[in-house]
Amino acid sequence: MISDLPAHASPAFPPIHSPQAQSPTRQISGLNLTHEASTQTRVDAAGQSHVQNFPPSLISPAFTPPSTPGRSTPNPNPRSVPVDTSLETPSSAPALLNTLPIVECEVRARIPTTTGHEMFLHVYRNNVDNKEHLAIVFGSEIRSRSLDAERPGETEFDRMTRGAYVGRLYPGRTSSRVEQIRREEGVSARKAVPLKSTEAREGAVSGASPTSSVNSTPNGAIPEGAGAVQPLDPSSVPPLVRIHSECYTGETVWSARCDCGEQLDEAARLMSLPDVSPSGGAIIYLRQEGRGIGLGEKLKAYNLQDLGNDTYEANILLRHPADARSYGLATAMLMDLGLGGERGIRLLTNNPDKVRAVEGPNREVVVKERVAMIPLAWKTGGKLGIKSEEVEKYLSTKVREFVDSAS
Image 1 (cartoon, rainbow, N blue to C red):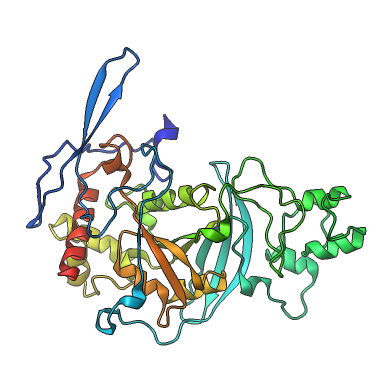
Image 2 (tube, rainbow, N blue to C red; image 1 turned 60 degrees about the horizontal axis):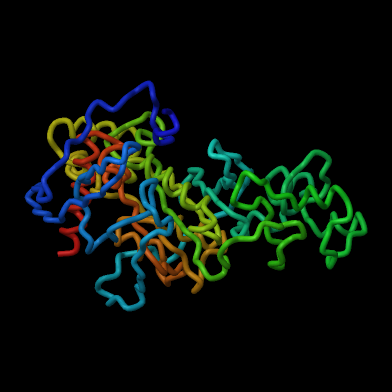
């Protein structure tokens, strides 16, 4: 079934390799991991019991929690590790930029997705490069400050065209602000029920989406008609955040050398679930292909991998850093989206080093929890997710680098 495939996979290109069940003890590039394989008993339609052996995770529990939500996970709530980088010693902190980049959200638009959920895609410009970095925002609690700011000489139509409106657009709308529409139609801000159809359309929430398309007004009040009641208090749960680096090969051309496309899909899935992320979420999509070396150099690195080198070695052979990515832009974009400060975020990552890097030089963004993203193939015994020798090599290399950096 096409619905069983990951969103970035093409049914026209089936995987060429399916991993076999492996021993609980593996040797990976000289690293001995001795996690025991898990088992699960299922009962078929005839009442017969079957025991399924799941391959052990490559990732050590010291770095990643033992489970994270997936299609086979009964509990939809992510398992996470609380973090507090304020307790770290100065010597353990990574080298960060002294000053964050200046960012501005140029335009925002509502994107109805193929899953039935909705999100808002934001395009950002900055003062350090000429790339268009993106923020994919789920829910109604997160808004860009630079987008909402008044710009000289613009009309209400200009504001709506660049996405600086509250609520939902509809044919005939003339104002970007809910309050102005209410005043024009004589609707009291204290009325519990909208009096006119325009107000009803303005506050409508799509029934197919668990994320409301109605946004907070500038003073923090929720517009009338927001209606949908979240199962959890959004203020009690920090929003989910994923810092995702562009991966054209893994997200667009079905590459099985990495799990980037799968991680992007999983982040979006979690953020669209009100039970998991009642306060919404944001995927900060940074245009730093190939760990910051660009697509052309990345393809050269692929050829070097086929010659026997791992991901990090290939970059070094090309005279690039093993990982040239930086996260100052991500920190600045999170602050512009109102996700800075002590309320904090939950960061979706398997990399503990990314926590401090995302927080910024003065902890402008506070990471409260780190939530793991276990590959789908590992959680389902190879039934779902990416199936290839290359992705196993890629993931084992990342595990080795985590262990080496922590030792």
